[in-house]
Amino acid sequence: MAKPIQVLFVSSEVEPFAKTGGLADVSAALVLTIYNLGLEVRIMLPRYGSIKNTPSRLHDMIRLQGMEVPVGDKIYKANVKSSFMFGTFTKVQVYLLDNAELFGRPGLYINPDTKRPYPDNDVRFIFFCRGVLEMLKKMGWQPDIIHCNDWHTGLLPAYLKTLYKNDKFYKKTKSVFTIHNMAYQGEFPRSTFAKTLLPPETEPLIMHHDKVNFLKAGLMYADVLTAVSEKYAEEIQTTEDYGCGLQEVVKKRSRHLHGIINGIDVEKWNPATDELIPQKYDIKTLDEKVENKIALLQKMKLPYKPKTPLISIVSRLADQKGFDLIGEALDKMMKMDIQFVVLGTGEKKYHQLLEKAAKKYPTKMAVALRFDEVLAHWIEAGSDMFLMPSRYEPCGLNQLYSMKYGTIPIVRATGGLDETVEQVHASKGTGTGFKFGPYTSAAMLEAIRKAVDVFADQETWRKIQRNAMLKDYSWEVSAKKYIKLYQKLLHV
Ligand code: ADP
Ligand code: GLC
Image 1: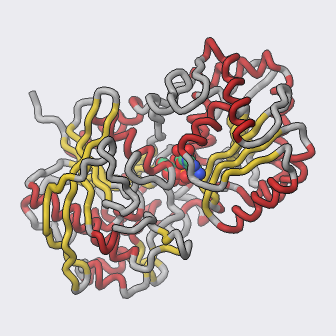
Image 2: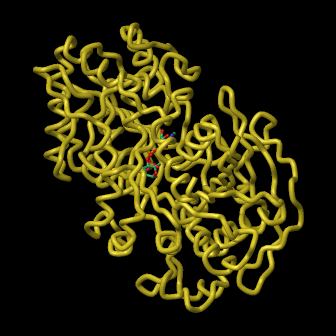
Image 3: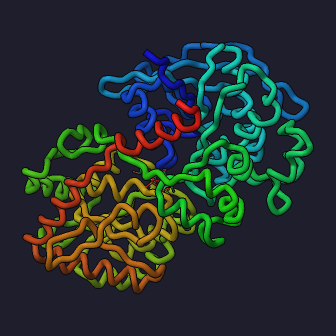
């Protein structure tokens, strides 16, 4: 039998170790699926201070000690710790790159006290990328593919094609770079270039508008690029709004760019088996979903009104997610017969906006401005509708979770949201959600109004819920597409 393809997946976020958004969900679920499909895959992330060393999560065994990783004119010492990630029948090897000075901090990228990015994020992620390549050599494990994700890992493909180009160990190694979000680029001053230790001729390839740009490095040097939906793969080659200044770079690599839609972990996000929610249910017992609504409203201190739809949001509070539209539309929204729950954390201006709104409408709106995994599940299970008015959305996972829970998404037709949600036609009983096109509060309000109207006809609503719940967004189909790409790259 042929040797299985060996893959190292490198990501700055992996559930359940470290998460600020969907990257963590995707890293974990995709890798577990790839493993189940027969590949030898391992995963690597930094050993952040926030990772709890509990026995069930992290054994924290030292796998390598005292490894040396050069960054600029300094040599950093690194340890590699070993842990595992579990699926139902799966156990995947996890490596954590450890340097207490650089990563032994409470935040992943942002200092929670100052709310600003750590000033040495360039050093931290240069160290991470080089550390991964040094680790593999020390360990003697030679993956066929190194699969990188987002700007934090952007330098890694550049290293493979330059400093490690003539290294026999990496002679056959190919790199894949997945774009989860073009808006975060890892931009640093020109002086950062010296810290990368890349040869001088690479400078123009990783500089952009006079800044060192880690994302651009990944886009330029990886053997293959992917984006997390087909629609987003197209969008990022068009305008500044989507390509965030790198649209021409992406366009140049168009032939090597593939859109592959994210899936969801249906073991974790499934109302029939979800241990975190008050009342389990499935498509046949949909009537029991209401128990979750009652519990959620009680938790959020809102009155339960059987005929009033509950609309919710779980989101990073960032410009990407459309909170300016919500700010604009709020008073009009609150005139409708709806209730509104928001779980989120992020930019201060949106914390203030939401807190103020919840005070103004205490019986209609409640907010939880924190990161809360359990509440996220309660919201998916207990809400009638889920709002995602994103300015742009590479894929989006919450609309997929929502559909699985029979919670109907109301989304802006962009990126992965457009690709995964099918417009409702109430008279025909078809569709899985409500979409609006223009990025305006009027268009969003119109979509909410339509959803509220259809909700009043519970028979049709049930049909829409069933349509949504029957959609299959499990990882298997998309993971197979990644595997096909690996095979193509390796000519196997
Ligand atoms: P993004 O990666 O852009 O933030 P996604 O929709 O891909 O958007 O993924 C967001 C993930 O983060 C989902 O799993 C969502 O439930 C989770 N999430 C976001 N904010 C919170 C929060 N405040 N509490 C709990 N989970 C959250
Ligand atoms: C990014 C995107 C989101 C996507 C997630 C996982 O954070 O904003 O749309 O679902 O990555 O790929």
